[in-house]
Image (cartoon, rainbow, N blue to C red; front, side, top):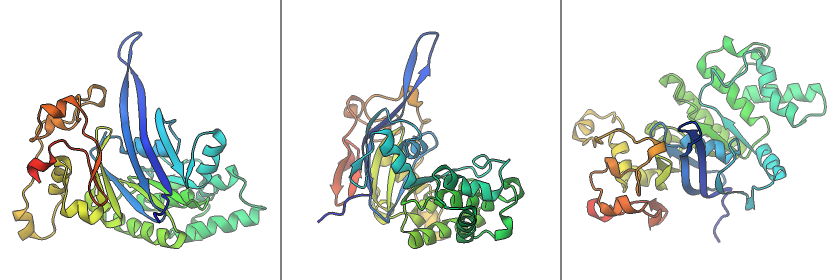
Length: 325
């Protein structure tokens, strides 16, 4: 029997109206018909260039943006009414990219972490609230004496730990991590990623881990999804996508990952894409990647290839895959 996914996303679209003149506007297709599911206890990595719609997927998933169309299912239940959204938000959380702008400078660490508890009235008295805050601080590696200090007094890594503690306050089952280590030093990145791993084991968490650093994603993810200009182009197990990328865009991304072994690095053939990424406001017809793809044909301009399963658990959207694999 197949395990029911914790999160199931079907044909999700998120369009923003952008003004193009006095009375005219045009839809910016930030997320265009994306479908995927995440099993309980799993980490799905979501990668792609800046502006491809990764963050919008994460925010729309938590209903921070109202989806233009499509369905989001949580534990087999479709999220539709305001009541559904409220219940779902108590079971989900988000860790934001920038630890400098996502924390309120006027609030102490204790108040920042305690805010979700206050909003959802999750404690009987002040003593219970304080105990819960200290327990969360301890869990993310902060000292109890940090509780009455302000966010600006901390380093980037410590600020991100405060943000993670705040996200965990409601004991969520599902956490969207939006590039949580991209603003941190490399030495701190490893500590924070290992902490995410430990927290996942201790608290039985499920992650959507958004990043553009493929090494980070490979380390933490069970499966990896690749996005390009609002569309999902490939999805497979992390090892499978590294060893056998099928989509030309994925191949290019993986060829750019630096290798620690100098001999292998010299043998590595870097696939450099020509041209710039098109604007999502004026996306190409058919497959959005065709303007930069060395294998593009007329069929690519006519229709978007279907996102189909080519081997067990390996999904790709490409018309000409057989030509170069």
